[in-house]
Length: 261
Image (cartoon, rainbow, N blue to C red; front, side, top):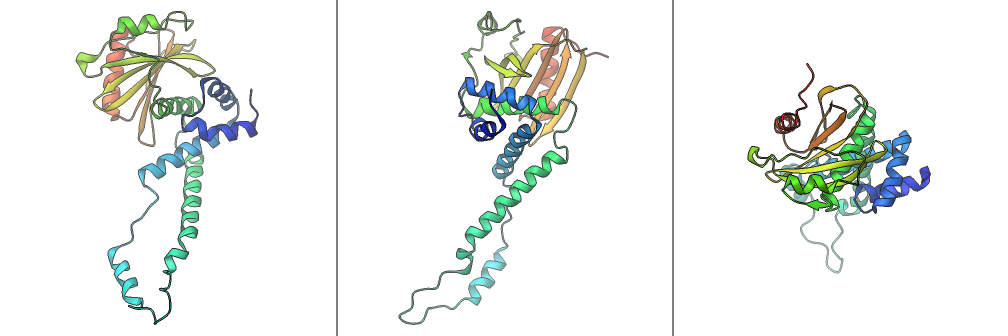
């Protein structure tokens, strides 16, 4: 196990998909029981998403640049080196202010309940696992579009047999499967494609009652969670919510796990 200090040091590498499986598992166990460290992980994910989306940048209007140029002297006096522009000296300060603004925005996302729904900690874990699988180029342990190859691969690696369905004809080709770790246990992750997008379907046993698919949206990603016939399912992707709902309906039809009325 790791303590909070060790966990905080590992979280950046974990988010970047640079931790090996053993340390990832130890960190995930700690995150599942430590709200403060889990919040730090979520804040970092929100920070990365905000920077990647360019949501915290604002381009100055062209008129401002023209006014600044007009106010500057055309040529420096003889023998004097050109004066450094005032905004060059202020660049490091501006950068620091942007970073502080991003951190504050990320913290606000958590406190405002951006992903605050029942099971939000598990939803954050599922989303982190999805993102990690893409960033670390470890989407699949077994690469195959054949369900009769992927399903037997899980035999002996899990204490249950996950359903693996072929949805190529419906526009969701099977990509393969892998082992993952969620909710303090090993789970099956089955990967599907949708044009250039990836859908991760996480599956593991549950004793909870059947529940209909519940949507959660977070930073451009959509998650759908449901329980059926003693199994819990989480589907996550950056495809549109309507497409993800279509995928879930197909999975439910193929597995005979119709939504409870």
